[in-house]
Length: 115
Image 1 (tube, rainbow, N blue to C red):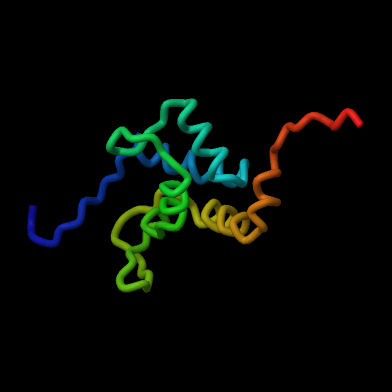
Image 2 (image 1 turned 180 degrees about the vertical axis):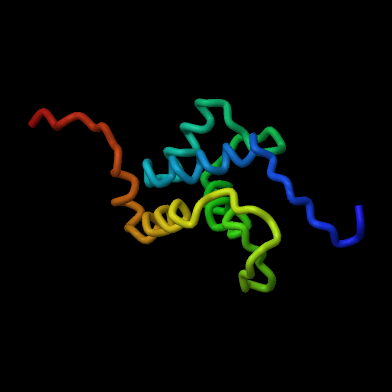
């Protein structure tokens, strides 16, 4: 491989997990709930460790998944394919702007109080 060459392939198994995390975060609105769900499903990071909410927040902020490269805080069009669509990215980041307490109750199935 030549110096500076960029690998232009996507590990589809890993990309599928990234897309799943993005989609489920939009649906659940909670990194904590999502981390528990991923643990229950046995989904781990590349190193085989359990995914926690810190990992999720770091992942969903990574513009690399949009097909961009980031250098010193500025993002530029990358030379690689996007893993998530702009629509999914925008949907997730719109959800992030909501109050975390409101986000976390998007899909709660709490029973009605008895009184």
